Image 1 (cartoon, rainbow, N blue to C red):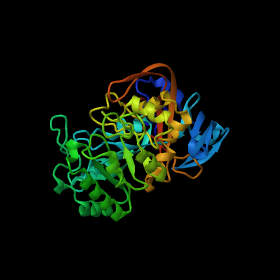
Image 2 (image 1 turned 90 degrees about the vertical axis):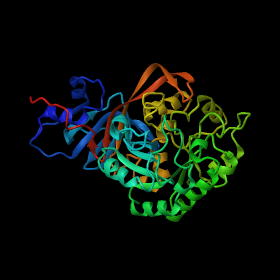
Image 3 (image 1 turned 60 degrees about the vertical axis):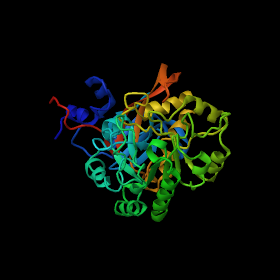
Image 4 (image 1 turned 90 degrees about the horizontal axis):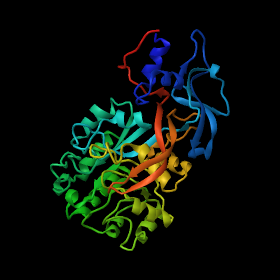
Amino acid sequence: MHTRREFLLHSVGPLVVGAAASTLEQLLSAQSRGRSYRYDLVVKGGQVVDPSQGLSARRDVAVSGSKISRLADSIPEADALHVIDATDRIVTPGWIDIHVHVYDGVAPLGIPADPNCIAKGVTTAVDAGSAGAHTFPGLRKYVINVSDTRILALLNISVVGQSTLSQDNPWGELLDLRYANADLAAKTIERHRDVIVGVKVRLTRNIAGEHDLEVLRRARTAADAVGLPVMIHIGGSHSTVAEILDLVKPGDVITHSFRGGEGGILDPQGRVHDEVLEKVASGVHLDIGHGAGSFSFDTAEKALEQGLKPGTISSDVHQFNVHGPVFDLATTVSKFLHLGLTLEEAIQRVTFNPSRVFGRLHELGTLREGATADISVFALDQGDFRLTDAHGATRLGRRVLRPVASVKAGELYGAASIPTERL
């Protein structure tokens, strides 16, 4: 049996970076023992922003087991075994980042999942093609199956995944067309349908060479065979955006959609390509995928001025941007607060919208009663904050979201290895 202090440290120790024990005590309180409780956990006093319900108001959220059991104006603390004090905090459904790279130690750009996802408010992350058919079993065994973050995956159409390209070896996984094996990709997906949600293809010249359209056709063949979408990485490709979009279907995802440079969504005059607008109207999803070189403030400002908003905001966080300019999904979302999205619009793009992109995620992204109890708690800090895009351009932001706590399927994220002190 844990003492009260042990529970506090076990539950939230790694989440509030730099926080003193007294701060943790204020965040989470354990009720007295020796009685039964109506709820296992209540997140109390926060501003609940849940776009799936059109809700942005002060509410308490109760959890029983792994499910949301109640959402109400006020839930008595005495009804809950544990209480998170979310006063002056933003409470949302657990965030979903549909573009990360967490095949740490295999894909050169991979990073550990938990310190960069669930510890930062992202309860569900989609690894975007780090593994291909030959390397996916390892991603499942050593990452997906053992992480606290809920991890799903897009399978790279290349059998070797993203194991070839690094800062020291700038040659990607699709330069040899023989690695783009649609049949093997489809068979791998069928064996791992519970965690693979689509196919990933990267079309940049140093990754796919001059046969980018053939690579995309093979990704399309694999995805169609298993009834899943394709995520297409655009920018710097041999073929034009119009040629690429001809092979894109409703339900597919265009990532790096607000990138700068050639091969993006803007024509030379800064206007959004008509083909892009047509595809979005047909049901193609525009995803941000910030990354180390794929998000431009200038592109974003021009697209938003023309009324084009991204469907999903994702980080593309990996080895070469986790220390800047990306840092985490919260920083990426904060950039869109600066760009003019309301808090509710921004939260929608990391909760409800991504939950609709891939069928496996439909039960997530909401705080409706009966839903999986994924909850993210943030502080909304006010001040002057320097925000940097992938090209080094900066803007002065006035508000940034800072992760405070994450609950996944009713469990408050923490680490059992933190030393505890008996009281």
